Image (cartoon, rainbow, N blue to C red; front, side, top):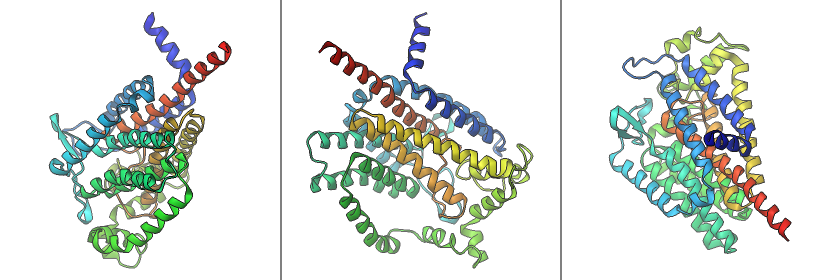
Amino acid sequence: MRGLQSLARYIRQTDKFYWILMLVISSYSLLLLRTVPNPESRTLGYFATMLVAVVCGYVGAVLFSLIDYREIVSYWYVIAGFCLFLIVYTEFFGIAPVTNSGGVNAKAWISLPGGLTFQPSELVKIGFILTFSKHLSALEERGLLKNPLHVLLLACHAMIPVVLVHNQGDDGAAVIFFCMFLAMAFGAGVQLRYFAALFAAVGVALPLAWKYVLKDYQKERFLITYRLDENQNEALKYAWQQIQGRLSIGSGGMWGRGLFQSPRVNKGLVPVQQSDFIFSVAGEQLGFVGCMAILVLLLLYLMHTLRAARKSTDLLGRSICMGFFGMIASQTIFNLGMCLDLLPVMGVTLPFFSYGGSSAVCLYFGFGLVLNVLMHRVNMDKVSLKHKALR
């Protein structure tokens, strides 16, 4: 009886529309993955593995939403230390379970018992949201958000995960961390002149990064994206995924070829179609309509996350929501850019849709944090009303 009362109270306090959106997105993702054949018969299928990840993610989301986010963030030093340990451990003991074409060999995973692997950078994204939100909130409390030195220290905070995951060869994750930093700093009210200075510094650094930082295969992947029709041999070597993905999306037409009936999906012609190129699976099987459904769902999700940020009662909660917004928005833009041949392939998954246990579970943790901000904002409002009534 007490359990039912607790469940009813949770349902009353939580954001029902956000939950409905999340359930629809999860169902659509699982439907697409159910249609993708798994060539490794000894392992669980993509659908079964993702279903386990989704269930674990929902359990984690509920747990994250129950504890006041202010209490969670009060342990920022433990979170920061654990995240740093994960990245450093991966730097020395990480593995590259899949070597992609063009020389990509990111050592961004660690081995777990039972032959499983885990990508620590996905969990570190959640940790970064919490620790960077604390950093912003602390500066606001002390009136230092406009201080040049402290703004520079904010940038240094953000560059720690960016540099460390870049050293692992996971430049896709590095770009996402940078975008999260931009979204959170902007949402906190950091002055625009600092953004102008940052982008000017990035503009100066780009030629140096091109010459001394980027590897040959990374340069080729970027260049071939904009000249696929000029050099067929280079295109087949560095842009095979994009070529095949574009063909799959185009072959679906308006309504698609049908679930389980699409030859390109069934034959696995698009490499890693269950993950980075899941959008091509939707394009071939469900056509333009299926692709637009993904875009609309993610757009609604992003808008509701922004709404949560606006409704937050403090900068800490707003920064958490903005960090998650930056994470989802940037991954969506870069993944779709890859699939539509507008951006080079960089190993960025489509949020909630792409296969990957690490990514899925940690995304649901982020969902739980935004729910946390919404639910405890309500609680704080009730406390404020009680104080006003007593006066």
